Length: 388
Image (cartoon, rainbow, N blue to C red; front, side):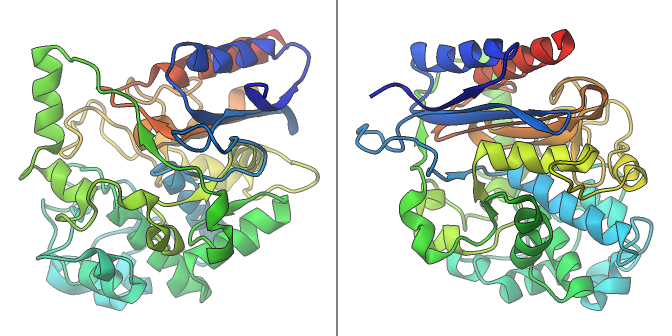
């Protein structure tokens, strides 16, 4: 079969196809997809490779992909929609909407502080099992009862898993809908997209299996930094594993796919994610999901310049849940906003270029900071947009 199972590229956007194929030629990919919307139109939709390590199931138009923290961007869009409708206010206290959250001295925490990882809630107090973490009521109650790990708003530390439950509970409190249902009803269905936070059981056979690219040999300095980020006992280990509840391989488990983990287990495809982001900055087939004022407010940084992320041990820059342009997440330039995911995925919008972009893959690459596959694809998309 041909490597490319979906090959739609508008004239002038061929550099994206070349960059996509380069990842396979270099042995960096098993299966992947990339999509770009420009001025409301789909100009790139590429998928190719295989859903499994044995190369027995094509990574085709039917494939669905776990995108890890790229999910946070969609959750942040849902929150922004609630703000636009007057249901939430970024400046208001979280406890106004979620009274139980005020426990352990958290009564003054604002929605903005929570969304920009400034609440010190990157894990829960005490032990927690995977089964408990997959139960919405249990994990949100545990978070409400947890004390901040650092003084609120004194710094920021990446809420790798907890972000989604915290933000998702706000959406549930003010709309009466779970975050999975809200995303489906208010974002996915109006746009004719496909993205799930809480996968219907019957769709499990379509999910591409996650696998790891061989870990490269890092310099001693980089290896030391990566150990400081995620070795047992570090803040990174607590945040990324939720005190050990999420171990290696869990994101290939059907029960994890079915649960709602809106910081990490979104499942969809690149064309849908690029379409969603395009609809935050303009109309896509007559649908726009965020107004300009709301989008502008939601994407203003709430991170002091050069402040070190206490969990990731590097400089990160967060707005109202979105990652914004900085050395770690340059995206397509200064106006960009979106979110990256573990292993390489990335979805964002760049209003200055009227562009929505998404890259998803089933081959997770361990890198110190930037994924070369993602870098090539974004550079190619920028080159094509600027030439159009």
